[in-house]
Length: 290
Image (cartoon, rainbow, N blue to C red):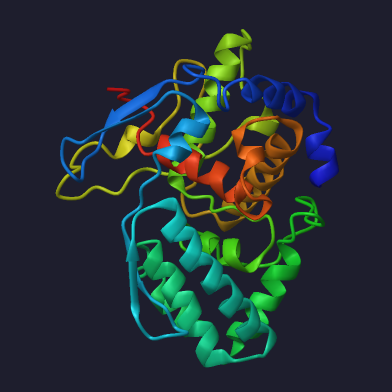
């Protein structure tokens, strides 16, 4: 399936029509939860755009260009450093600069809090790293990708999706939280539409939350399944993760294109990132709603 086939699917069209009314109308999408860290802090939104307005991600990473540590938590602060990392990564890959490509990849992973499990993968790519990312950029191009024909071996997880998102145009970060939010929205659409099953084109995978000091025993808080509506786990399948990522790219871009909302009033270069950010916040917890 390619982009055109996916977006012409009737179930996809109906879902886009449904979600359009949830984007920024007050109380069109009410969601809330209690953060595990800082412990006990309440978070809520009253629309999908409201979730974007309440975005927060505390990050710290090294800027390879200056060598300085950059910290922040707002959407603007994240977008500023990601934009700079994007320019640097694309140029270092194009220039076949192995050392700089490694540094930019590690900084992106550090920003996303997923450095530890992916550092070795970056190092193992060694001198092939620039060739690898040129190949990945070509294969994962959302405008040309076809799920039927792309069997090439690529690394895909919650870390590498962040690297691809700054390397490739219109490529969103698809992690467990974004997948959980998509599942929640699809489930609500199915419930309101009285569908007995989830359409295959809308069957998105989610990822369990990592358990830690502040979240022991609640790793399933990102499982949007309910009753007969069952969503799969991302697990360790690179192919499943890639296909989910590309379908989500197509879907979110089309939502922006076909809908008239506050997202469209943002600068064009951040609209897709803003919608992704709203999904990221909603997907922190799709179970408790308290």
